Image 1 (cartoon, rainbow, N blue to C red):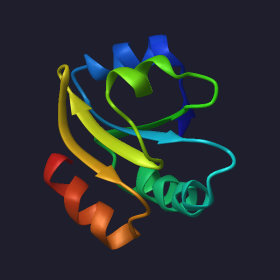
Image 2: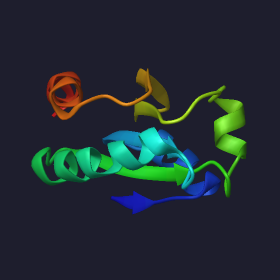
Image 3: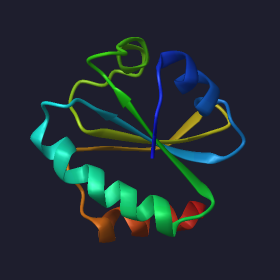
Amino acid sequence: MREINDKEFYEVLNGDNVTLVDFWAPWCGPCKMLSPVLEELDGELENINFVKINIDDYQEAAGEYGIMSIPTLLVVKDGNVLEELTGFKNKEVLKELLVKYN
């Protein structure tokens, strides 16, 4: 899972591929719980890109997209947000959501 900055977020947002963006922070307990789940899914779902953006270091994208709580996950493609989830979600819930884009 690759860590990105604000500039890269806009490139990912407008990309042709489906991408899951994890808005997180190092001090966030639920973010720490979610990280290994996303790493596993990254290895299992080949047609979905997984990236994360640290909102402490890069706040522009989080502000523009109204990210008020973390972790927040956005599923994006072609400049559109396809899904938005907030809080910890287990692997089964996330896989069920993402498999339709795989």
